[in-house]
Amino acid sequence: MALLQKGITRRHALAATGAGVLAAGFGVRGASAALETVRQGYQTNMWGMPTYYLLRSGLLEKHGVKFEEFAVPSGNLTMQQMVARQVDMGTYAGPSFAIGSDKGGLVAIAMIEYVGKTARVMARKDLGITKVEQLRGKNVANQSGSSTGNIFVDQIAAGAGLHKGDYQEIRMDVNNMVAAMAAKTVDAMVNVEPYNAIAEADGLANTLVDFYSFDKLPVFMAATPEFVEKSPATVVAYLKAWLDVAKDFKEQPKKVADTIYSFYTSKGYKMAPDTFAKAIACVEVAPGWPADIKPYMQKQAEILLKEKKIKAIPDWNKALREEFLKQASA
Image 1 (cartoon, rainbow, N blue to C red):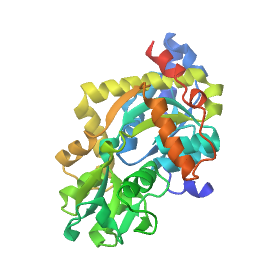
Image 2: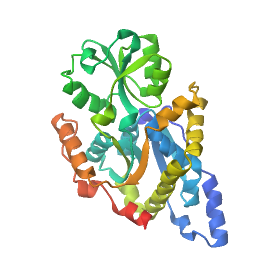
Image 3: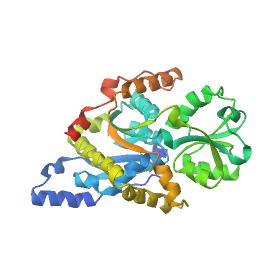
């Protein structure tokens, strides 16, 4: 697990300290002094960008929550960090959460967003491939172990009659796939936004299928059980900030887009604003507990159990902690 620390960025939210001093001085949010610092993990693809916005918006500070951040290419890496107790909270989709709950007793404190429209299977445009079944014998870039990786292998590829060995899986971080497509070292990729929109805008790839028709891909905010038990008040304050984030996504989309767009341009990605707008529009931020979430997670866990990726199906009444969001929403 120590290897996961390589390349991780870390930032202390010092502004929150000032917020705490002001709170003490004016008698407002005096209880915030008792809140724990959150070690926040997030992925640098589009799935993690609502969390990135949370960290840059000042909304955590508003609710008296201090944080440190740990950025990685995909959510399954955050999940592994949490299993190793290197990070307190992080976002990832259902399959990764089920694995994290099985291996490390992780719990979910909210369903944060739907990202099924952000994930696609794309093939190099010059190959003329139009269907998933045409990937037989091809090199397919896939973030092995990630939620998208698992869904592609276990559901999309299998549904098209492709099993392990029918295609060559090239293990690769999602942020390296567009370059691999351009270099023609891979024939197809299983990727997420904004990388899909970039590949499409550059004329490198065409879409074979998006994930939404297979899976709406709810993304959870997970936490370690120790953190939840140690400071439930921090969890509630943290989720209040998330409710504010959802409000910004609905009411101030330009502010949100500008904040997130700056992240990708700072990393050297060349992306037209309209290309980025198309990518971020695929993310639906809606913290809540949908009525169908337990049956959905049961189905995902049954697939993982059959594939021997988990040892047992988690107890969803214990793994999905709905009470904190209810308190934050009160």
